[in-house]
Length: 190
Image (cartoon, rainbow, N blue to C red):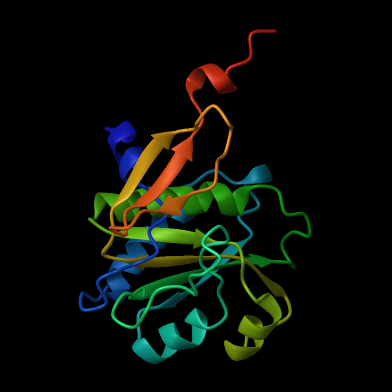
């Protein structure tokens, strides 16, 4: 059921690095992105796949992991993603950004959850440095990076408190808590 997949589709930031992801799995996930809707059917997205340790390490150092966890620099050795998908926009196909990358990325993430994986969609990327490190031609612009692996943490949804604070946090046991607004808070009766 789609609701179950969405409830399992959390932003995981710690993974079991001992369980690799195969390139074939990444190809299957990219195919879901390819089949997703695209504005004007332009299909301007391209992807760089990584499931090799050296390339993963190269990508890792160009990412920021959790803005609200200011004392955490990201996953430690042994808890890092075992695969990445770098989502690119082909500027020779389209100069406008729209939301194609968000639609495709959600499809990819739901497919990952269905396969027992988890991930984190990362928008805080050192784009210029990562483009240079991966030798990405100028016609391609990095939009997002998807970190993937078998989750090694628990993520729990909470209801936003009356103070309205939406910042996620970790408790003393390492459980990651994510406040969500209620339906009553987001449906407007105008």
